[in-house]
Length: 402
Image 1: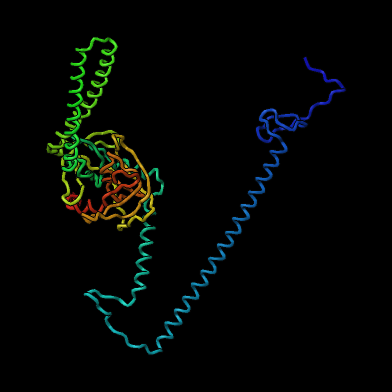
Image 2 (image 1 turned 90 degrees about the vertical axis):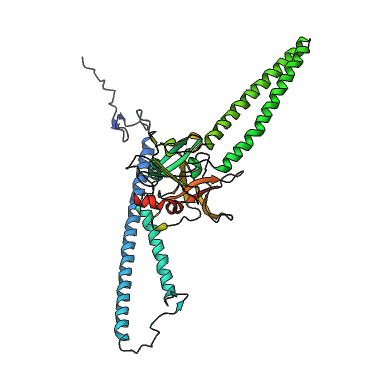
């Protein structure tokens, strides 16, 4: 049945919403479907079009300006070439003064007369080398960290744990104190064990005295109080003994010789390997181990020996307190020299926590610059790494022979 329209009724004109496309009455100022206000939406679109035209005009102006600068540079090059050609041919007809055929010699080293030009060329070459270094790897920090994590490993020994990283497809660099107990650390641990054993013996004697006193007391309330004191004292002694026994076990393990087969290597994905080779440096806190892997991702030193600059961003990787694949960041604070040994270290404020020892110190491009080794006691944000060059100096024969 069709609906009849009375003569007094007028059909309501409709229009399509410019945003959602739904049909709404033309007289309505707001879309009942998506809620936009037509006049405001149209004004916003008009502003967007105006802004787009303005950006296009600016881009066109820049393009015209660039072409103008290029033309000027071309004219300057032509002028320089013409001037040089004129100078070359005109100088042929002029007499030239005689000069010394050999440059002056100082301390068996030839000193060229064009030293300023050579210094300028060296500075330019260094700048180009640094630029080339930055262009050889992506600056995406996420990609750099991901690659470095694949090359970083955790190391477990009978007496502790630490970190290391692949310096080649199957050799791993770490700290010597990670795989070989430090004599000073052994003495420190021994010096802490002895007085704590004495404290535990003293606490046990106090507990025995309280028990003897308890047998002579008849007051129930007093007895109850002494029993509470004895229970608390026994609880504390049990905690002290557990900690002391852990130290004693660690000391015993540290005093035993460690062989390559005692060292476990854990990769980023959790895969475990047993070392088949170990060697330590006699000059630095460095060690090298190897595993039966021949295609591992490894870290590389910076090309051309490009040094770090103060303020450069750096990252440390490792397994502090057993937390594998931990990354911390900071800045390179400077090169520091040990006044007693003369050895040089890289200082950084990137966190180097227990367990980070042996892990890599890398820059934003992923080049390895150092081996994390220690922190300054009773300070925050002062950590040190051994320069990577020391590892190549200590184990270069092994790394070259592979």
